[in-house]
Length: 418
Image 1: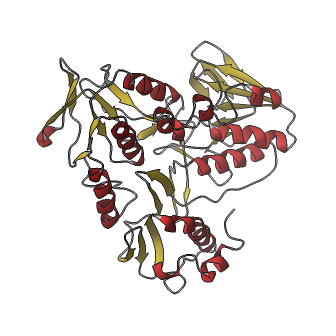
Image 2: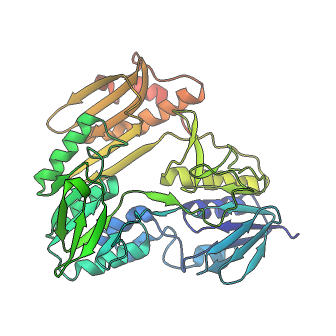
C-alpha cells in the first residue's frame, strides 16, 4: 500500500490536519473527499451572511478558491459523498463509484441540521441554518419580503435568527419544547435576562412547545405545536440541533456512541482511523466523559493533533471544556462549563452586566456572563483547564464574581491552557 492519508470531510478540522501533516514534513499523498463542491467554509458565520454583516467570500476559511489545497498538494475528490469506509481493508468508496486506498484516514465530516420526522418538514417555506446552501436559500427568501416568521429552537443559532429576521422587519415568534432560552448553557436566572432582551425587541416566545407538524396555507405555513397550539407565518426556520454525519461508518469496525469515540491521539477503536470535529466524542475535562463538543476551537485542536499523529509525530490533546461566546441584541453572552452541575450560585447583576458563577461545593463548574465582563472568560477558562489537567479545580477561595480580572486570576492564567 502506498504512503497515503485520506481525509473525509472539508471543514476546519480537515484544514488543520492538512496543515499539520505538511508542517511535520509528511511527503505522502493526501486525498480529501467531500460531498460538497468548493472550499471549506465556516458554518458559524452563515447567519451573519444572511443578515448582511459579512460578504459571501468572507464565509470561507482560506478564501473562496482552491489555492490552499494546491499549495499543500492535496488531491481533491469533491461533489460525491462517501458511502462506505471499510476500515479493515483500508478502503473508501464514494457515491460516484470511486475507490480510494489509504494508510491513515481522518473522519472530519462534521454535523448536519436535525429535522424532526414530521409532516411538512420538506415544504418550500421551511428552512434550516447550518450550511452554505441553507444561508443562500434563506437570504433569497428574505428578498421576497415575508412579513412573519417562526424560529424553532431556543439556541444561540435561534436567537441570532430572531435578531436578523426582526431587523429585516418580520414579526418573529421563537418556539421551543424547552422551558427557557439556552436550556443547556444558561442558568435559570441568566435565561430570564435573555428572554427579556428578546421580548423587548418585539419577538414573541412560546416555550414547552414541541413542533409536531407543518402544513401549507394560502399565505404561508401553519405550524402545529401540539398542546401549545398552532402558529401561522410566512416562513419557518428550524434550528433545534445537529447530528453527526456518520452514515458511512461501519459500527462493527469503529466504536460509536453519539459520535465516534476517540482517544487523546484522536484515534478511533481502529488505530489507522482518526476522527476530529463535530463528528467525534472527545474528553470533556469537566465531567471526565467522552462527549461531542461542537466548538470551532475544539475542531481545530483535534484536527491538528490528528494530522501530527498521522504524520508520525506523537501528539496528544487532552480535551476541552464546553464554552460558548456569542453576540446578539447588543450584548455578548458567555457560557462556560456546566451551569446545571452546581449546588450554589454566586450572582452579580448590574444595569449593564450579569455574572453567574456556579459552584459544586467549593469547585467552580460553570459560568454565565452577559455584558462587558466576558473579556475575562478566556482567563477563567484557561485557569479551569490548568486546574482540571492537574486533577483539581478552581475553588471559591481563588475566584469570586467580585474578583473577575484581578491579579489573582492573572496568576492562574499565566502558563495555563494549550
